[in-house]
Length: 467
Image 1 (cartoon, rainbow, N blue to C red):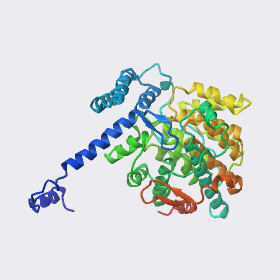
Image 2 (tube, rainbow, N blue to C red):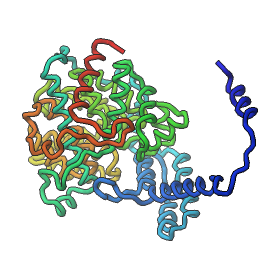
Image 3 (cartoon, helix red, strand yellow):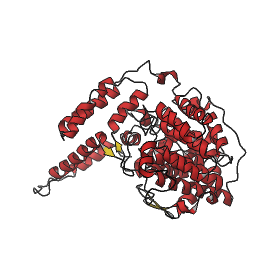
Image 4 (tube, rainbow, N blue to C red):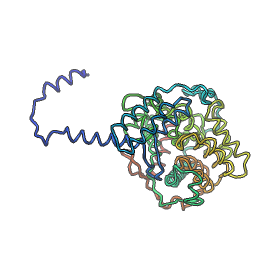
């Protein structure tokens, strides 16, 4: 193997000088492109709108909010918010750039707030800690070779994709404002489409899993991320930048990642459950491996929550039973458990989903609508009161608001697996057909049927121990 210095030395030795005309020089073009891109991205962290629903976002303020949620003192960063908003309003990019850097500096150097309830709970930093803290339910191996398994996977994907299309149009809003605008949401509020960033990361996981099976590592999945996914947002954006800079998981999910307990891992747990049918421990392990790419602690536990829900759907037929057992496999000393336990107790002591959801909205109002917590609570309420009915569950999860597409898609997968295609009314999937549009490199135009077949084949191959 040739040394790097030899290759560069040879390159320089063989390079002959040329004289470029003014038109051939690229300083101006390159600098102008870079400047415009950087200015746009700087402004977007202070003010943007969600592509699917146009809900307003200010992710840099969300970062400050998130760091306080994780038990850190953020007063110095908060003092900079009015200055940043003023610079944005005045279109003063020089000052805005400085203030943006100062905010991140203050967050990176924020001190612990020892009075914060966050520190009362155990911080989970590796899989062994998690595994040793719970008792996983055990089931006999199911039949993954029959047509029944194929139908469950297909129906699971169809349900997930339809639910994502339903939620994309209304994410980022409160129950009250959704109802004021749309009334009681029981169906798509606009013509549905499948373009959604959530499924992006599930496809990257599936690609790595197809190649490595149950031996897949966080590194394998992370490299699929940088190969397949051109851009991300919040936690995933930071993780992608970390990985591209050589910071691999688990550090990629934690280092300078202010959004590491937001919903980004929770929104992709379903695929881990689909490839570990009836094996909640393996689903949880895969979710941990995948989650640490972009998240840490409670953010990763959020992915485990959804992975276990979906895994159990292959072996349990009652949604409340699935919910009960999943909650029982979340560590009791984690803050995440306190969230879903609170929501579950509201359900048990309420006569309707609205009665249960209202105190959840109040309790978790300090958390961003993209944080894992309010969305986990919404899932619990929808599953509890939606029981075994797909339409009813979609109605509740839509009306709960928050990050609706993530929540609806994940729990919808459960219903597809339990009931098969007969449990999903044709009104949901006929407008979508078989097409899945993404922005994943090499997978921009997929067939849902092909994705289902791919999932089935990858799972069967992994179970045989093939590479």
